[in-house]
Length: 421
Length: 162
Image (cartoon, rainbow over all chains, first blue to last red; front, side):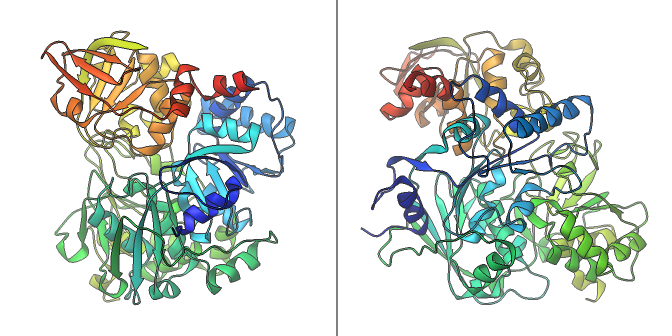
């Protein structure tokens, strides 16, 4: 029987010619990732192991991005612990603040993941790299420890859902609206344990940034991974960022999918996920009048250059609403610098925004923009559970950079079209 | 392997941000994490829970983050096992890896209520509700996963094999 794209990558890394859904396998890893919250737990677990050295110092990435620059003493201790491990184990890909970025924007930029790779990361949004045609999935710290020590991980081969993307997204609609639309349709457990495999002519109309955004939120539908085919756009991106050899896999014609969804990209409207689940979606015309206290633009979901350019287009020559707090996080130093050179940072500051160094910060209610009781935020982040960004009585509305920027100007959830754009 | 205790029942989509809020993730000390377990949806849980108790929930338990702090907090709070209709996949994996037994059983998840006295026989995969006088058949794990749970976690399992 035919295999899905995900199944083919797993089979190759398990050293077998065929795998089927439900089968338990052990695979060789190309990369193991951790951050300042999850790596300390993993390092402690690894100390309990008989294996004392990491399996390959070049195949591990450690990124201090969650509670950095060190947000308090405990976080500083965690970062120190991770840093010392990186030094002792001579880890090639440890990125100190000043060179790091938010991990899921940083790794593709640094060329650490390419098509055909198997990547595990102790962070749920590790599924982001599926945009590059890799199998990439989030795991916990113990799996990270075992992975760092042995270079292998066990998996149950996933079944798949197929999403056929057709057409071209309309003005102001991007990857965020597309994935929110899909999660709204299938629910937060609609893809539980499965691969979300994206195919179709519409993919050629999606930039790499769009694909990273879509793959990033596969976990919000409960998926094991999200994955895109490798086309000229992918190859061009990889050649620009990496000198690693890549392998292009394609699903078999007769691969089995539990369900197939057809998505007309041109019919998707700007979409907002209301509190307190990413599946609680409404299109922008159905939103009504919702006043907002804070807007966050950034994160591993939407902190890339095209996201900042979109936000700048909306904010150019405008000021945010009185009393509004707009916080913008370029996802990596390179993105920050490029945004500066294009004049985007000046646009943001002139509009009244706070511009921050790369950090996960407020996305998980860590620091740099936490919410008080009764406050409402529009965020280009990926989760809006109760208490996610601060007080349990605060509310988060997930949206695209275009909607977020427009909302910052009007003071309520808006689309750029309400500003005449 | 058995569990016997009082049930603490929750609904659908109990996510990792409520099991252990991110503001406590700068620590990984099990006792500290246990003291903040579930506080954003059930302030009283930390006072009510006794060692050996059982958590019961509906769909998609443990959804959200990959933070292992979530099953660590639950295990350290005294929870002996979690019964749910379905588990989110990263939580499922993490629970097995740290040796927190979990079992999927839609019927048990629907019918058990907070306060019920529940017993779980892991070898047979059977759940007994002694308060209601009912029993349910849970889904058995593949042998490989049973072995990890028996070894009390993935690290022990790997060490034993080495």
